[in-house]
Image (cartoon, one colour):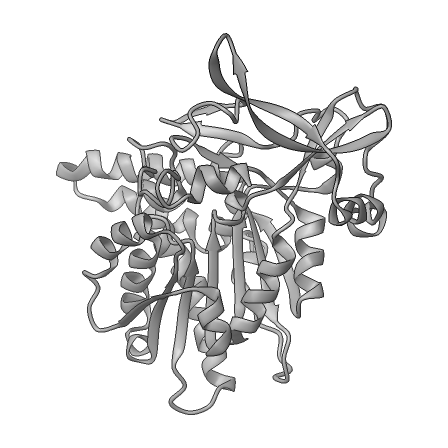
Length: 374
C-alpha cells in the first residue's frame, strides 16, 4: 500500500502527478529515452509479429499495438514511425492503444503521440480491454518492476510482512518500517516456493532480518492481459533475476530501491512521492504466473543479445557513413547504442516473450531469441 501511494496517489504520487521525469536529465534513463534507435530495432520484431498474425487472421482484421505503462510516450511514437518506414501497408490496418492509469503521465504522452499521423490512437485500461479484446502485440516495457510488492522479513525462523508506520520522534512525525502479521497469500507463496521457484524460501544460512519481495499483483495482471488479447504475443522488458540469485542468502535486503535525479537510494522511506520505487522481477515466478494464465512462454534473453539479433551491429557499422560535418551526431548515437547493451546497465534487462494460448495453433517466430551470430 505504501509503494502504491508513493507512485500512484492521485494528489501526491510520483507517477500520477506527472512529477516523474524520464531521460538523461530526469530521475532515470530508459532505453527509449536515450535515442529512437531502440524503437528502430524493436520495430523490426513488432513488424514480423504483425505479419505473422496477418497470415492467420480474418480479412480486414484491425491490429492493435498495445503499450502498457507508456511512460513519456516516446517508445510508442518511435515504434509507429519506424513501422511506417519498414512496412507502410500495416499502418492503415493498425491502432495504437495506450494503457495508462495516471492522468499526469497521460497528459505527457498526449503531447508526444498526438503528433503521429494516419493512425488511430486511444487510451484505455485493462478492464475496458477485457470487455472488448484486441488482436495484436502487447508491450510492457519497464512497467512490472514498478508494481507494488509485498516485502517479507524473516526473523528467527518466522516470516513477517513489512509495513510502514507513522511515528513520533523528537516531536516530529516520521516514517518507520515495522513487522506485521503475514497474510494467507504470503504464507501460501512461501509454502509453494519449492514448486514455484525451484528453491527453498528462505534459503539456508540467512542472517536475522533477511528481507525480500514478492510481486503479488503479477498473477492478476497476466490474467487481465490474457483476457484483453484475443491473439498475439506479449513482450515484457524489465530487470529480472533467476530465483537462485533473487532469493540468495547474500541478497539480504531484497531488490527494492528508490530513484531520484539519476541516483539510487536504498532508503525507500525518503521523500515519498518525489522518488521512483522499483523492484526486480523473479524470472521463475513471472514465467509461472504467465503460464497459469493462458500464456505460452516463447523464451527469454538479455537485452544486449536481443538487440544484436535485431541488427544492432549493422546499425553501429552504418554510423561510419555519416558525413563528417555530422560526426558529433554519429558519436552521440554510438554512445547511446552502446549504453543499450552495457552489461552492467541497460544491457542486463531481460526480454521475455509470451504468446496467447487460443484456438489458433501456430507458434510465433521471435527473431530476438535467435543467435545473433547466425
